[in-house]
Amino acid sequence: EVTATLNGTVNATKTVTVTLYKQDTTVEATTTVDTSGNFTITAPAGTYTVVASAPGFLKAQGSPVLTAGATKTMQTISLLAGDIDGNDVIDQFDALTIGMNYNLIEPTAADLNNDGTINVLDLELLAANYRASGASAWQ
Image 1 (cartoon, one colour):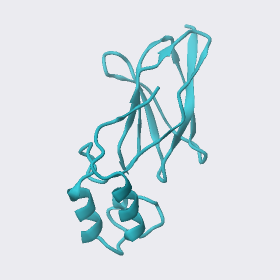
Image 2: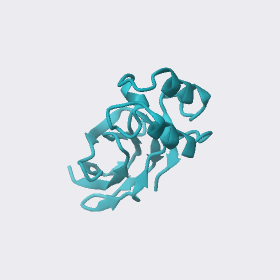
Image 3: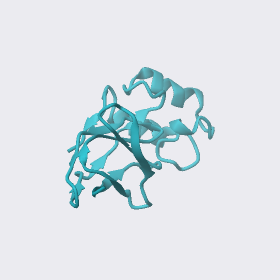
Image 4: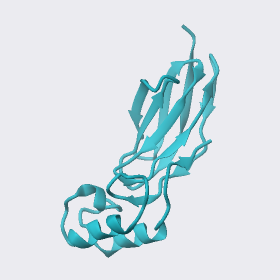
C-alpha cells in the first residue's frame, strides 16, 4: 500500500491533538504536535477530514486530499482560545468558568495560557475571541 504524508503546524498554548478521519468518520490516525506545534501523519492516499483540537480552544478542521508518495502541508493555523466548555462557541459561560475558578488551577481547560493559574491573563485571551464559534477553516 502506497502511503502519503500530511504535515503542518498548529499553534496553541496547550498540547494540540491532530486527528485524521476517513470519509466514514472513523479515525485513520492521531498524533500530538511537538513543542513547536509541528506534526506529521502518514496514511493511505485518499480524501480525509483533519481536526486539530486542544482543551479550552475552538477546533480547526480541513479536508486534505492525500496523494500516494506525496506530502501535503496544511497551512499554519492558530487555534482560538476560550472554548472552555467545549460547545464550539466562546461565550459568557466560558467567561463565567474563569470567574468562578479565579486563582485556582482547575479546570485546566480554563487555564488558557497554560501558566498554572486561572486569572485575568486567561480572561484576556478569551475576550480577544469572544463570540467566535465553530471550527476554524483549515486549508
